[in-house]
Image (cartoon, rainbow, N blue to C red; front, side, top):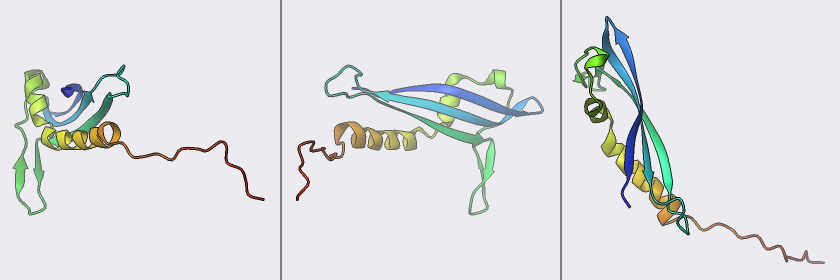
Length: 115
């Protein structure tokens, strides 16, 4: 079943009427809630993306050019999200929870304490 990704929050941080930073949240969903055993899993990821940032090596990385918040499209906001990282993390989460869940201990209610 395909993974559904939805941008659920986009909060702009403005200076001089131009967005300088975005806080973005994307929800991932996969599976079927009514399947037996259940195959449904969801997770949300959040990132704060500044227009530019100084990298550890001292260079400057430009993520976007500041502009008025009304000038942004949904596609541009989604393009700012680190989806390749989020895709990898979500796939690992789905695998560890749904596809290959850990074995859990089973209680033995008939256990008798030794005398």
